[in-house]
Image (tube, rainbow, N blue to C red; front, side, top):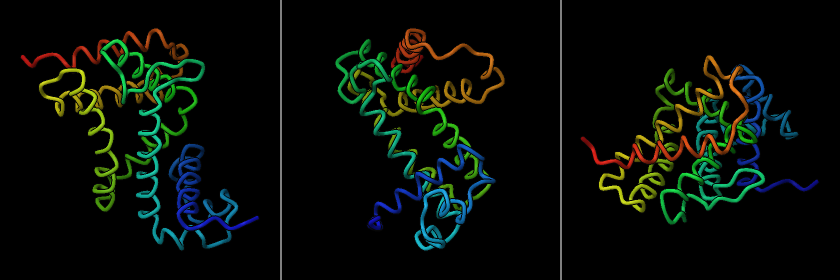
Amino acid sequence: MSTPPPADRRTLIADTAIGLVAEAGLRGLTHRAVDGAAVLPAGSTSYYFRTRTALIAACYQRLAELDLADVDDGSPPGSAPPALAVMPDRDAAAAALAGLLYRWLTVGRERQLARFELSLEAARNPELQADLHRAGQGARVRAAGIAAALGSDRPEEAAELLVAWTEGLLYDRLAGALARSRPAPDLAELTAVARRMLAAALADPA
């Protein structure tokens, strides 16, 4: 087996770390555990990310990359609504946002749970706050561009609302008190929710 170059190995380590957090929580995230799960020589993870803080920061960056890639794709398994980046109108944007939510509530569920758990670590570790902020900026910039394309006069404000509502919906359905009792994600229901979210975010402020 050939040894992957450093850039690929960093990605492998970050992906493996995210998977470990999804499976066992932050208590399962150690350099040794990542080496083992990634089938890398002992000491590989600590070579690229000397501290646990550096490893978590790498997870933030990788999660942001993966989430933005999903935004640009914008389609749930088995359907093909237009990507958010190229939607022509609000109905198409609602369909694309619903597709994104559906993906994150189904095939992307574990990754989103890991993202929430890793994000909470920044509330306890000031060294991680700048990394989390930097990782989160990409989603807000993308959301502001979408809001502007849909006619918002205040795209940054609309973006903050859209991101906050999206995060809240995901958390509620993945980890909230009623998460286990809710029915399976439904694309039609999510499309209706997304349409209401967009309408409210793009409405003129009172």
